[in-house]
Length: 125
Image (cartoon, rainbow, N blue to C red; front, side, top):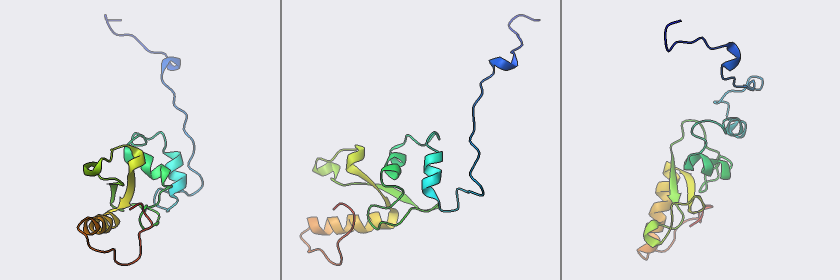
């Protein structure tokens, strides 16, 4: 054999065990709990958004609806950084973009002295 080249035996190769997908399950079937548990080792599982989704059980903190594939999500600071809030997970919540817009507008109006209108949000205000 030429210098620097060697054959690797089959037993020296990395092996990864895979778990078969249950029945006819699909990431697009709406069973977010199954897929969030299944994909815990996914490369994105350690991101702040993934941790929030797991903590919130795949639901929006404002409207309470389950996030669906294709929904646009944003992270919301419960206590604004300008008011001393942090970027830690316990000060963040995942919201639909439109829920985040409504919550932010309501909070801005309250800071400007306007009374709260409509029903209170189910999220932290």
